[in-house]
Length: 428
Image 1 (cartoon, helix red, strand yellow):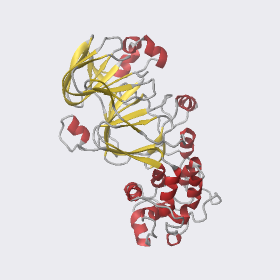
Image 2 (cartoon, one colour):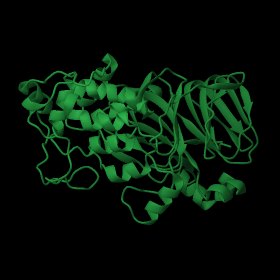
Image 3 (cartoon, rainbow, N blue to C red):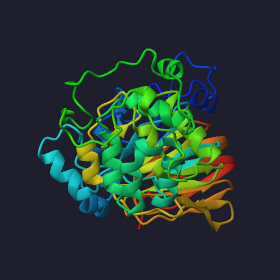
Image 4 (cartoon, rainbow, N blue to C red):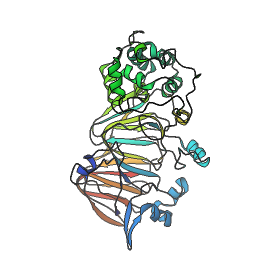
């Protein structure tokens, strides 16, 4: 085992306290700290201590892939570490997004599609280490129709009709490419199904750039004057219909969700797409599993993530970053996801895992001294207390926020001390 120094990504939605507290630094930090990356992804690789200074883990593996990964891993996944571990700390919502499957990622990366920064898929598992809120996968479309009917009335009747017929793809596309005034639409819905006064709408949209008619629409397209549109799309604020026309019902949670998102993105139709997804609240130890094509958004909290080593993200809204609705629709799976939460399974005293159907990675949490036999190379991250972790190559001590890497074929991991450590390795 060898110690790692791992970089922090400073995205605007990040927390100023979570990672600082985890690593024992003064909090709040000077700026937002969103993700601690642990691994060998070229976008932000961890580093090892070399004889002549820090060495990128990506470079170390590239120089000796079989020694680090083992011959079997190289044969299956190529000469790269197949997985990436992160600590994610969100104080604000992340984008509405999904990730491609492996075949599609390879095809689009080879074609030079700017949405794709590598040729890999990005299934991911997030385990909460603090209470965590997320949106994950499509819920029953009739439930979504009820909420949108109650909150949007006749204005959203075309979307509601798609949902009543189970046409999730059409409903998502219509919302994300809404051809009318999006700020007015969001203001109507966040008013709770009642007509929003003009001054409320003005307040909700203050400081937001209103796109002129010839500005590009999400997805790289252009909203044309003769695009098909709902009868009320683009109507003046005073003409927007109240939200009880079809007898639908929205819960207090539905209204709280759209108001929460609209406070960050008051003219983004992704606020409404959120009502098509499962709201998920995780307590520490609970997880969400996101396979390819799963539309999701993290809303806030902290967790340990394990994923295939990729940074391919297709965004549809709730972000200032690049949005490509057309490509997002190509990768989405429109199945209803009944229960996105994965509970931990204890496999030994003080050792739990979260079973997911993927070869690229597995994740274990260890809270008692143990011997752990895993498949392939390993990454280890301490989240509490102090632990030692060793294999045939050496032993390292870890404190919260510190990580280590071990090569394949170095025998079982010996974990000791009073603390908590997450260990990533290959899956099935």
